[in-house]
Length: 301
Image (tube, rainbow, N blue to C red; front, side):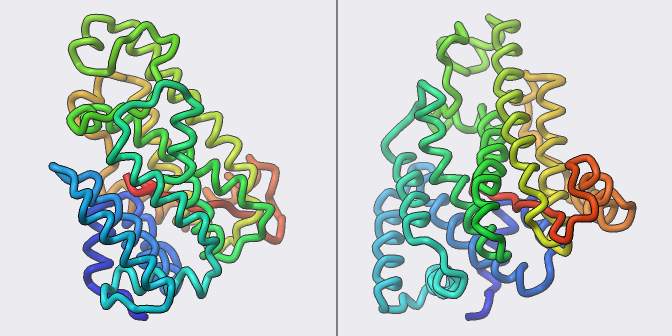
């Protein structure tokens, strides 16, 4: 089934960093990424709406399940995803985990332990890494690294989006041991040292998971490295800026501009940055030397 303008607009409006990075994929892979992100973004939009559209989300899930059972929905977002799911042999339990995490956003406002957060992250982001691994034909040995890449990127989303999530009545970052009662601006400004320490500690989680994910770069075909590295570089850029000034999360949403993403992608393609990264990972010269995809979402977020 063909990618529609709806797919393009949904992806572009929902995740500009991923959208601009994805432009460096070969055409067919890029089309499949649009099919994937169209589905996850639309599901996410229902639960992120103000007010939340719980009825719309549940209709979306029911329509997906009916299409999967053999009754095309007539909705290009759902039908294209079901076709992709079958063609790329996505594990249905991954889709179920994604939809479960989205449903938690209708029910749950805060996460008090890292274990709780990571349960949510598995469905909201790690499975996106698994979808991408299947989409670009990676071996199963790469799957744990794909999950970690999704986890790392989602965690930066949580940190970057503290202010936005507060408005939605959500807190994904566990406060246990931080000494902070919540993550609103007033509390942060009343306890600036504790808040800055907390945010930098969360960024250390991200850096640890990102470093582990990069051990799987050897599994990804070279032709896919540029868009993946570009998205990864942009998440690192975001982390660096928040680490330097944790209070920036209350002033603006820290995201790279389109020009920065495109220029980084061109640099990765033209300057030998890919080879340098592979050497740094100890993978230079390996016939598969490459790595995993940005998830989204984003994860969808």
